[in-house]
Length: 524
Ligand SMILES: *[C@@H]1O[C@H](CO)[C@@H](O)[C@H](O)[C@H]1NC(C)=O
Ligand SMILES: *[C@@H]1O[C@H](CO)[C@@H](O)[C@H](O)[C@H]1NC(C)=O
Image 1: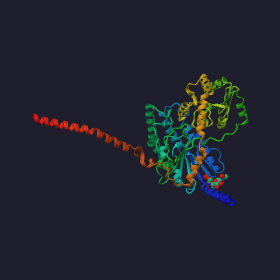
Image 2: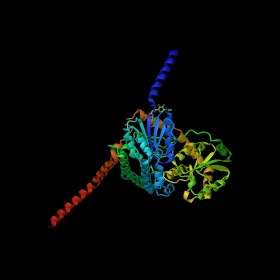
Image 3: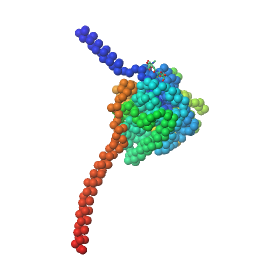
Image 4: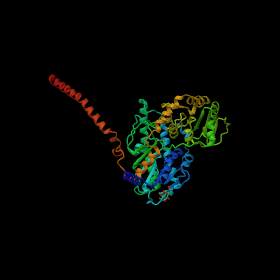
C-alpha cells in the first residue's frame, strides 16, 4: 500500500515536470503598440505586465508608456501625439459631430497621421539600431491603427506574429485573419444598431462596411505601404498588408454577453475583460466619502480621450447643479484640472480615480460614462447600471447595446440640461430593474472556465511553443473574397436557373416562329 502511494507521488511529480517543461520561460517579445489612445494602452499594458510577471522580456515600441521596469523596456514614439493633435489639428469633440460615413474618412486620417508621426519619431531609430539578428521569439502587435511599423517584422526575420486589439472585434479583423464578418448581424462600430437590424439598417450597414473595407484596401494600405517603403528602405519588403496577414493568432476584446454572437476562426481568441483587475479596497478618503452617502455613490468619468475639463463651463455647471439636487447620493467625478465652480458637499473631483475599485464597491449605485468599451466592460463585470453619454466611434454602439440590454439610460451631450441630468440619473438609480439586469449580465460575464487574462497569456505562450503553427488559420485567406463567399457558385446556380426558366420560353417562341413562317409560305 505504502509503496503504491509513493509510486503514485513519483508518477504525479514526473507528470508535473513534463508539464513544467512545456511552459515557456524567458521569451523575448517585441510589442508594436501603435494606437494613440491612452485607454488602448491601459488594456495592452495589463497583458504586457502579466507576460513580464511570467518571466518574459518585453520591448515595447509605443507612443504611450509608463516608466520602464525590469524586462519591460519602452521605446517611445514621441512624435505621434504632437503630429495628430498639434500639426494636423485633429479634434475629438469635433469628430463627435460627424455622421458614421464621415467618420470613416476621419479614421483614415487618424491612421495616416499616426503613421507619419511614428515614422518621424527618434524612437523608431532606436529599434532600427537593434541588430537584425536580435532574437525576438514573438511579435505582439496592436492592429487597431494599421501595419505602419510591421516592416520591423521583416527586419527581425519574421518571428511569429500575434495581433491583438482592445477595440472589440472590428470589421477589418477579417482582412488580417480571414473568416467571415456577417453584415446581417454584426453592425459596423460607427452604427448604433442592435444585432436585430431592419432591412434599411442592414442595407446601410452593408454599404458602410463595404466602403470601410474598400477604403482600407484601395486607399489607406497603398498609402501606408508607400510611406513605410520610403522610410525603411528594406530590400524585398513584401506589401505591408501581406505582412499583417502573417498573423498566426489574434486576441480580441469581446465577450458574447454584450458583443455580437459571431463565429470566429479557431485562431481568434476572445479575451473580453482581460484588463479587469481583482479589486482592492478604496483609499481611506474615498472610502469615507462613499460610506457617508445616505443612499450610495455614483461614479462620473468620461474616459481618457474626452476630458471633463473640455466640455465647457455651462455643462459643468449643469452637472454640479443636478448633483446638488440629489443630496442622498455622493458623486465622484474624474476631472482633470481645477474647477472654478464651488462644489456641494456631495461631490468630489479628482484628476484620477480607481475606477475598477469604485465600481466594485457595494455602495456604488450608478456610473455616468462616455460608454467606452473598457468602461462598459468594467461596469458589466461589477454589475453597476449606466447613465450613458456617448461621443464618438464605438461609444454610440456600446450605449445602444446597454440601452437594449435594459442596463442604461442616456444623456444627449448636445442637448443637456440640469433637469435632464437629474431625472435620468434618478431614474437609473431608483428603478431596480436596471441594476437587476446588470447583475445578471455580470453573472454571465464572470462565469467562465478560465480568467480572460490567463487565457490570453496561455495562447501567447502557445505561439512561443509552436512558432510555425498554421492549422488554426482560416482557409478564406487563401480562397479570396469571391470563393470564400461562394459568389462563383451562386452565380453558377443563378445562371442554371435562368437557363431552365428560359428554356420553355425559347422553345415556345421557336415553334411559334416556325408556324408563322409556314403559314406565310402557304399564303404565298
Ligand atoms: C527577464 O527576462 C529574462 C529572459 O529574457 C528572464 O530570464 C529573467 O528571469 C527575467 N527577469 C525577471 C526579473 O523577470
Ligand atoms: C531584454 O530586452 C531588452 C530591451 O530590448 C534588451 O536590451 C535585453 O538584451 C533583453 N534581455 C535579454 C536577456 O534578451
